Length: 184
Image (cartoon, rainbow, N blue to C red; front, side):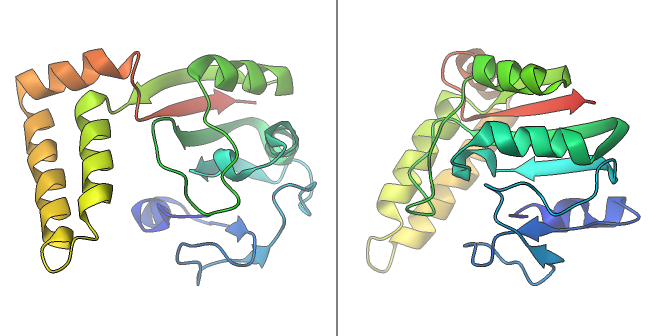
């Protein structure tokens, strides 16, 4: 999947998007379809960077995909990855796992990666808002707007010193998700 494609597309000279055929996200920019639970149909040492954004939790055997990303990366290539932790079930029935920082580091290192950075993002304010927004969004007439208002208020709150402090401190034990940068 490439839910963040529009964020990074202008910062790369060349992008190859690979996904299975029917994701829930926009994929008109897909270069080719591939079952990400199988060995990738890509030559070894092809890419200098790989982005796995909200993908690993949908992979039945994640070690296979991580080994494959390592194989198709060039020497000194970089894997940029994010995964949710406190998050609702999504893309049914293909939502398999939630990973701790310990699992992510262990799996990456087992594949040969050197973990450069691994840190949580979001904390209790973001988690509570996400849950609440998802619960109220289907309330007739006002739900969508109430959910958007809650998300905006939380975003503004975590921009303050006090809000940022709460989010950062609670992210250690209540992370919304993790971001990992690893190098081949």
